[in-house]
Image (tube, rainbow, N blue to C red; front, top):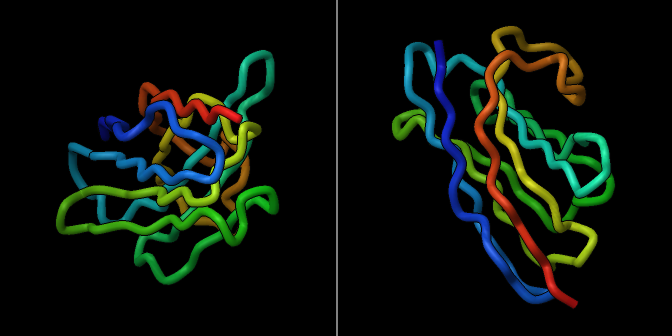
Length: 125
């Protein structure tokens, strides 16, 4: 079992930055691919970014590429999402997720087994 707890959300003006953290407890964190998803009000959960267990491979949704960076510190059992140049359309609840199997593409919620409770990010215009 893996428990995930997100933090770092909040209210920020357009153009600002936030860093989300996802702390994991449980065994074998270092071998899990990790991902970030978000869900806006009335919308489906959508892929934001993913990172391989080693951290060497990352993937981003086109809507955040060049603005967001995913990285991890396995010693601290934490994965991060650095969000820069935030836009009002980035407003959503952000969730981190852990997978037990690494695939070439990790862009759908079904690819992940464990989920955090989410953290709200609100970007004002």
